[in-house]
Structures are given as structure tokens and as C-alpha cells.
Length: 522
Image (cartoon, rainbow, N blue to C red):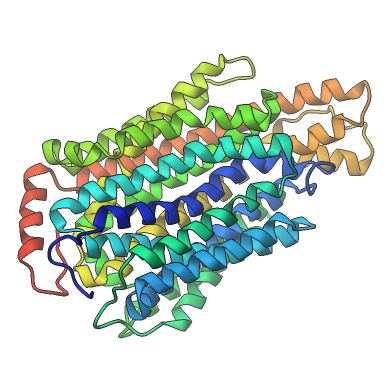
């Protein structure tokens, strides 16, 4: 079934299967947020440093982002169902390997393989939605799809907390395996095969350039957070990454079958929607990274309790994401997305005021407001991207959307993690000055390191923890400024470049009447 003009008769059951497939990919990152503190513990976990924890997150997201272009093309060429199944299987096997990793390096490598599987899953789900749903129902379906992200965010931290309370840290990855098995069976039973009748060639050189460029850029940012951005290893790697990515864009604009079709960005609707997705995920993922350490170390909550505090964020998404399509029809994508991003900015600004003794309900409310805001950003932005493209190019559009989302999240963790690291070291004071050299280095590397050292430092441990908490909160405030800036920037992009209600209706009519392969331009 290459093209569906009316909705597929089993389209809502198919959407349920796609939600299960999506759950396992999103669930993984939300579970990992709760497990970061445990994995950093040298006794209960792997003794991972903050930079190794950042790489445990970013090895996944970089491979994910780097291969999404190719995965989208492969799905359009080979078939979306078979690509989805292959991605789920790779993801499940890599999850099993991650669960039994014996060192941070092994975990980082296994997480990279998980990113490979996820890269095949994510674009296939959106492509199948675009093919089995009529355009009149697609916005609603994408709202449900986005709500599934909220569901994963809700159950991920709670499941992770329950597992960590009773089992070893690797159990948070093992939970993926049964979900993958169920997902594969249901995909084979319910999901029809579809493909692009005129697929592009695979751009191997472009894929390699994108991965190398993104890895160099992220490595440079993390290295700068560790050693300072004045060090040659940090700034030279960042420059190299920017140059490689610049060469990648130039190369993509000149070849016949690019992995990233830069011509897509001629559509203002497409470019603005992609931009706000990247900006909001930069802010949100960075905030969740430092928020996990705040809850588990500074506030002393266990994995289950800290996981429960992420639930309001997810509830906001689950409740409001399915309703966003109705809001867009009434007010237009410009108004809904701008309001959503301003809500995200308001929630993130709360972190500027949060300290060691702030009532915990303030954190819960901030997470809820952030979830409501993102619920009114992701569905209209995703629908705007898919509506700007002809249906047979759904895989490419989905790949671009998810690549920017993953890249925004990876850079958010890297950049804001670097800000936290640098500011923490600068404000730690002299509490670690009289410790042995190795212990002092560990205490200055991260707040998790300071807690591990304090546990062995006797009477000096209490003062070290006090100064480490104060330094971390100051560093968190610096990083919160960054999240706020990017959320506000996203709101400006939405307000200036997304179409209003009447313009969106005109574009929707144009999309319904356009010839195959033609791009809609706002």
C-alpha cells in the first residue's frame, strides 16, 4: 500500500502499535535520568564521572541524530514496517547489553548501538501515520503520538525508581526487552507495509560527515566543561565540528540525492517548525539533566521519589497534547505554539529561584507547567512539518524533525552540563583543599563526586557536602538562564514565522491540491 487517500480501516489500532514502538524509545531516556546518580556511585553503579554520564546520554542521541536521515530514506526505500521491526530488534538487543555493562565505556558503546535502533524506529512511526491517516485526521493522530511521549515520560521515571529500589542499575535497561518483543509481534500483525515509489539513493558520505561533525562539536563542548573552553582540546574540537558540519551542509546542497535535503528549508513553515523543536528540546533536556542531580543529591530523594516528581511534567503532556489539534484549529499554530513556548519559559524560569530548601511542590508545579507548554508546541510543530511535505516524502520529513529534536537535546545536555560543571568548580570554595589529591579532584569534578568523597571523609564530609550543594545550586542557576534564553528564542521564532489561523487554513487547502512531490511554502 504505497499511498492511502482515505484512512486505513485499521488506522487507530495501527496508531496504538506505533505508540508502543515509540514508548520504548522515549522510555529509555526518561528512565536513564533517574538512574544517573546511581550509575555515578562507585559501589552501587559504575562510578561514572559527570562527563561519562553526559556521554552515556549523548552517545545514544548523536548516533540517533546522525542516522535518522539515512533511516528515513531506508524506510521509504525498503519499507517502513520492516525498518521499524529491524530497529526494534537492534534496540532490544543493545538494551540487554547495556544492562550488563561492566564499565562506563561499555555502557557508552552499548548506548550508541541503542541509538542505531532508535534511529530506525522513530521516523518509521511518523511515516506510517502519514500514510495510514487522511490529512483531515492526521493532526489528531499526531497529537495522540505526541501524548505517548508524555506517557513514556510519566511511567519511565516511576518504573526506573521502582526498579532501582529493588534491583541493580542495569534493570532500567532490561525493561526495554519485553516491550520490544510485544511491539515486534504487533507490528507484524497489524501494520501494513508502505514505501516511497521513487526513493532517494543513500548518501553514505553525507551520513559520515554528519556523525563526525556532531560528535566533534559535542565532544568539544563537554571537554570545555571539564577543562575550560580556553584549552586547545576544547575549542579546536568545537571549531573542527563546526567546519565539518558547514562542509556537510554545502555538500548536501550540491548532490542529487542528499541525506539532508536542504531545499526543504526554503519552506518558512518547515524551517520555523524545525527550529522551535530544536530550541525547546535544548532547553528541556538540559533542565532535566541538572534537575535529576538536584532532586537526588541536593534534596536527597531516592530514585522512586525523584521519578515521581517528573510525573507532573508527563501528565501535562498526556492531558494537553491530544487537545492541541483543536486549539490549533481555533487559534492557529502561531498563537498555540507561541503560548506553549512562553509557558515552557515561565516554568524554566522557576529554576532561577529554586534553592536547597524550596518547597518541593514548587518543583512539581514547574514540571507540570513545562509539560503543558510542550504539549502545545510539539504536535502543531510536527504537523506543520509533515503538512509541508508530499506524503511520499514523509520519512524524510520525520527524519529531519526527529534529528533536530535529538540534536537539540544532545546539545542541551552537553552545553548546559558544561555550564554546570564549570560554574560548580568555580564556586566550590576550599572545602576540598585539604583532601588527598585524588579525592580533591573527584570532589571538584562534580557534585556526585563530592558526595562520594564526603562519605569517606569523616568529620570533613559535612562541610564538603554543604559547600558542594551551594556550588551546585549556583551552577544550576547559571544553566537555568541558558534554558530560559532558548525557550524565549523559540517563542520569538514561532511568533514571527509560523502561520496564523487563516494562513494555515490556506496552506492546508494548497497542500490538499498540490501535485505529488511539491513543497508547501508558508
